[in-house]
Image 1: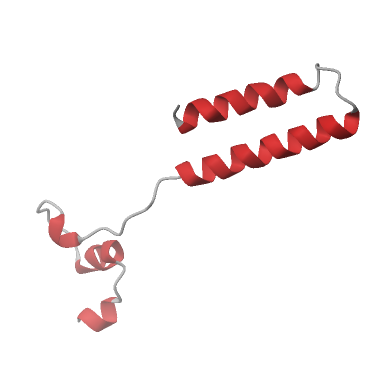
Image 2 (image 1 turned 180 degrees about the vertical axis):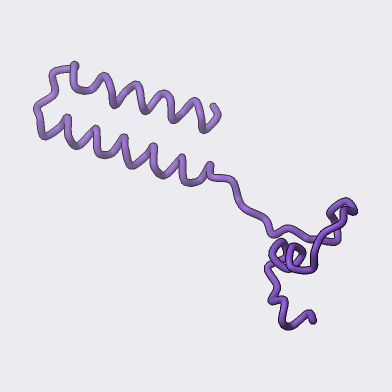
Length: 79
């Protein structure tokens, strides 16, 4: 089962809990736990941002400042 399917299942469960007749304390507890599970799974699904290597980019004309901004280097050190 994929993470997206798990999130959908937990979301539906959290939405239905209020109609199942649990005491209010149990309903709040289940809703909180379900929300935290959704949060944890969604956090793990966030894409990892990789640094961009200017050497691997296709050739294009650009200013020296643009390359420094892409590679996150200080332009004063490169000049």
